[in-house]
Image (cartoon, rainbow, N blue to C red; front, side, top):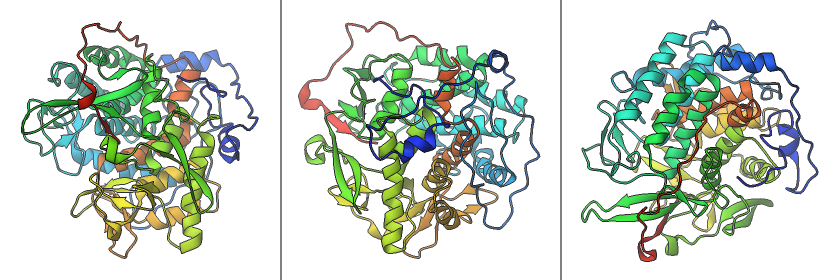
Length: 492
């Protein structure tokens, strides 16, 4: 991991850092007070708060409490949630109640559709940790879900016996293509693996008894082609020819999020984890400098999407530092300014949509233009611009005292079905709610609440010397490689 001025920076300095106007500002260093008795308690699995009486979801707007994330405190002593946050959590958990597969421990990525990627399983694991912490489920239910999932991940078939396939049938844990049809494998994604590994680390931190099993899952995977040369890599398989292509994964934002997690595991990620890598550039939108990736999609085969999600996940899991604090603040500020200039409440991200084409990137910047809404092929869908529910909750969790926070929450506060969970968003053009419910939307909402309780999750675990005890295996010299002519790019 690149040098950090604030090693494992957490919430005591978070508001100050995000308010900094320059990445070169002189920033305070957070120094936690030692509390060995709390650290010992965490290792004994007794960190969790007592089960809380969670109010039933009501048919009315639901808003978060406007309080800052947990101040920095020694070793996982969380803030108690307010009743409104518990209402939000209970609505989000409905999705996971409805879409959990007890035979495999997996969770459907979208409502009632038995398919998922490792990214979705990471979001579901984060949601399960939040549900336990908030007392929505008891320890027995939590352990049953975790043990079943880890057992499945320890035994399921891998893509070419190397790494998790990009998609699985959640009911059977068998490899599929993107249409959920049985497959010999369609490739692996380093970014998806990084998301799951991030919550493996939080799991091992909060519940150390599950650390050996989580570490054992990672031990099955061969990382030679997943991470090397300081970057993340994935593979694609052509459906017709079955020919495999190796792809460099990640663009500015998602690249750093995934790279930081692989660095936590001990891999060299000097390119991917660095926001100041050679591909970083800047555009001005409403006089706000926004960082963009300058890799040309015509050359590299993938669009570069600037969205809320990657920066919010980085902040909520790894914290703010001298390199990313201003970038995160500007992601918030530019969306606030669009609202100020147009009157349109803005919180954009990638999302499933409840109509064709079923998945869109609502962006701050993509394909050379601000506020583009496009598919992964670059097809314009400006009429389906939406406020992303997960983006709104994430931004409010990061900037709860800003004057824009109440506007964001008011826009999405009724975007839910009490029996299904939070919708993915609200369309800008008067088309109503984007009523699809997903593991990623509801998982990130629960993650935002967990962030409010603990501060940046992996940063808090690092401060307490808790988490995965994984050591990368020596690189295998016979690892296959791909000629440059086959190497293309993949953006999350």
